[in-house]
Image: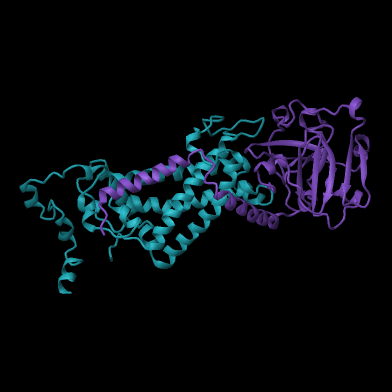
Length: 268
Length: 237
């Protein structure tokens, strides 16, 4: 039960509603984009998109045709926004925001994670619920999501809410920022999915049916991408003698958090 | 019951990915269409609340007129041209729920108070074009004909096959909604809806009927060419 890496049911539900809604928003958005896969006004050129008038492959689109995609997009936007507000409201009131807002030590912690993944650092840094790179990602995602929503409204109502569209630099730029927000969301989601399956597939349980085995955490397993597929090398005897904390097995977790699960359960 | 971890990952992973692959480039499940129509009606309610006659479109400073880059769209097989020899002189009929039905020739239309506006054309496809329209405000035409208060909708009909689109009266009475006969300082050509067409920056391009023949004030909405095919009936901006 009380694992620090478990997720509250509201977080689990909003996560999957978001996953479905975002997938449909991206797919239908790309189908809408394909109706005019460019940003330039008619009779003008656009500076900042190298693939003007190149359509997105149909396999990545959703909705079948322009009207179908628009209908999906304008229906699913409410699901995405309401679900997002429920999630943000919940983590604010319930305290989970503390797990995602970067700490003062963020640059140092993020570098520690990066150097670990780049094989510069040997052992997985100590972390709370999330490592520094996760914190950064989960903190940025709602902000980019908000940018996507605001630029989306600016495209939807460029005349009635002209002040908002003007704030984005006009309709053409609002469309561009909307597209770029999507690119960032897709890129971060792709990294997220890759890392889940290659570093910590055991976390799938905690985001679906709930529950997480601390002994399977990336730091306990000292895991980099795909490390769960290989046998872990044992440190040699001299290394273990020099660093008693480098116990090579699952007891690593117990060595670092001896007071947590083991002792309490024995007393009960 | 315990679920084998490996099995769980394989089953859930393949279920999600096969659902995604099946959904790609499809129109989505049939049952969802009713929900989508429900969402469209709710969106229309939101859009109607947002509509202000004081919210005006203005083309951004430094933008260029689209000119010849403005695409020409019509639903007939060839460019619709009014054949005077066959059909007599072109007139624009203003009728339905009005006190004084009108039949205006192009010359009569040109004698009415006119405005010229340089505004954005928002196409449903996502492009915009800056254009300069000259014509008669729809609200002036409505008061000239004496539109009745119960006329909550207006149908704009054309001689481009059966192309028409019906509007809510509030959008039709927006000060930037015009019956245009001039484009970029010249008389409107057959490629863009001559002799006269509807234009407003408060509606998507497809709502703006070209090749106008009749403006019909109605108590109920009357669909439209693209709206009946699945595009939003309201199509507001």
